[in-house]
Length: 151
Image 1 (cartoon, rainbow, N blue to C red):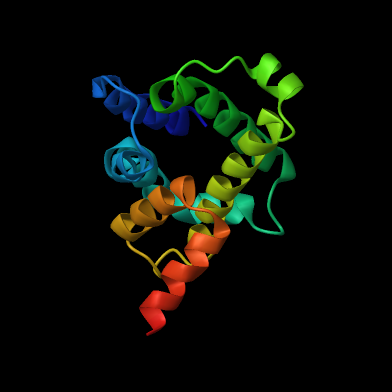
Image 2 (spheres, one colour):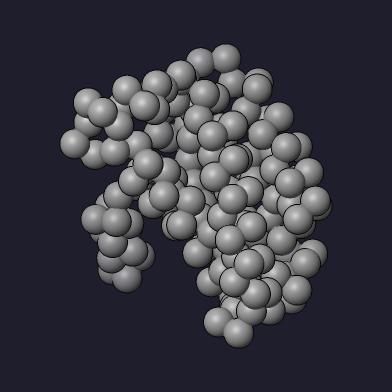
């Protein structure tokens, strides 16, 4: 867990160079650098992570990963979306911020779990590209992108 946290902190440093709120396309491009160390760490430890996160793995480890991801999401929000008053947003919005956060985190963690289950199926660069897409595209848009590759 310590190595994962360190990699996330190093990757988050890349976001400090962005001096404006990035557009969705810029966020997608930032995935190329904002996950470098994290994905390299996951790749180096893919067998252990795969075992711990498998259906026969350690549920407590999974919960620890979710907690780390929650903390990292909170740390990155100001760089990517500006200051959001989460309590106020949850009160005024019909789409609570906590739902958005949970969807984002679970999608990201599940991407790593899928990759871990078949670690040689995709390269780190392909995973970065997918990470950028899942951060910025709706499921409907992702299906359209997928269908365009089939044609």
